[in-house]
Image 1 (spheres, helix red, strand yellow):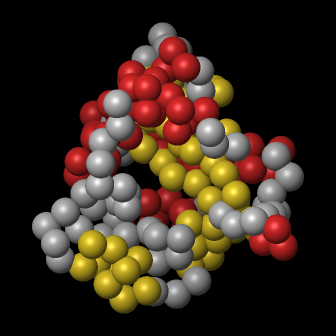
Image 2 (image 1 turned 180 degrees about the horizontal axis):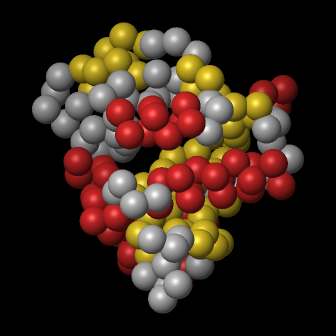
Image 3 (image 1 turned 180 degrees about the vertical axis):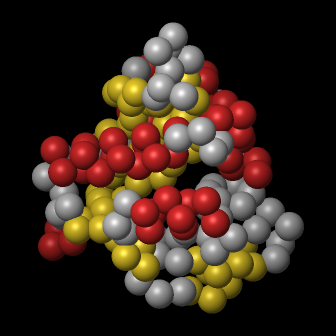
Length: 162
């Protein structure tokens, strides 16, 4: 699949919300529990330092990412991101495209580090992708994520120096 990543536009709100909400509904990767309307999604995606949209050569959207500071002040050089890929496109290189673009965009925006606070331990494809791109595992937080089922799963924070 030939994927390019471009800047989010308000006209992307519906499809971006659909993909984001699918991950929220799955309940195994994002901390959010509530889905967003198109209007809420647009406000949310526009409020980020950057939101990238992954699409094919025909403009069909398959995924997105959000990028923002992980903290403020003396820690404001550390960025954080979240990635959402449509279930129909998983395993086809969309995740690699959004993470790679996010690393590039974080550097462009002046961040020095990209940190993931809560990679769920059962998200094996994400863990393999992050490792292949040079991210470093910081440790394990036991039972740091509550699954949709109500059970708890470990989370594994990661970072990469940009």
